[in-house]
Image (tube, rainbow over all chains, first blue to last red; front, side, top):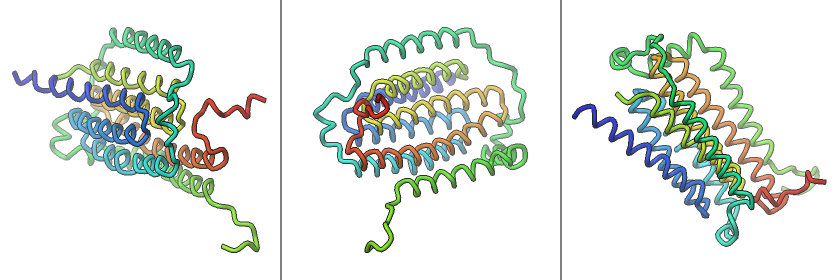
Length: 178
Length: 100
């Protein structure tokens, strides 16, 4: 009986993830799509908690649900999409896209069928996570082994934010009033 | 425990949905959201594999993917805003300037 509960929770989370992703893809209204995506991200954070990755679940909620989706919402509100509700929201070749996607799905599921999990090699065991916490385990690896990549990602984020500002800034011609 | 392959199949489903949306939708904002769905599908598979291997490398990769996705969303949405300012249009099949 105890082994059944994780499976039920997984099936619920997986079903919600797939259905909300389908809603995001097929929704006419971009605002509704963003909100369905919020539901999807929250359920994905729950899935991460199921996988004993609570730090990543927190990051998922803070970065995706907190920052990225707000950015999307701002842009959706900035761009008036009233016409979107009346016209076709799929391209003319969407059946071909569906066919290719289904083929990709079938092929990759066939490939995963023969998947054999490798033997555990690391030190991030459940007992260790329970003892010191996932954030500490992850942070230790991040700030020792992967410190260079961490700094590079920091610079990347800075450049991306500056790039977004530079791209959307209004160019003022000299002498023109503000 | 739930086998890792279940998570992999779930992530494949999400990835395929995102890929279909990216190919088939006309609205460029929804296309960017489909990219996010695909990145999240990859994140699920990486977290599951990292748990299976009990190694931190996969989870750190997920951390970096989230950072890169945030950067990509910022730049992508800035480009969408520019595109909309210039052409008053966000549907990708209306852009034919590269066709000559």
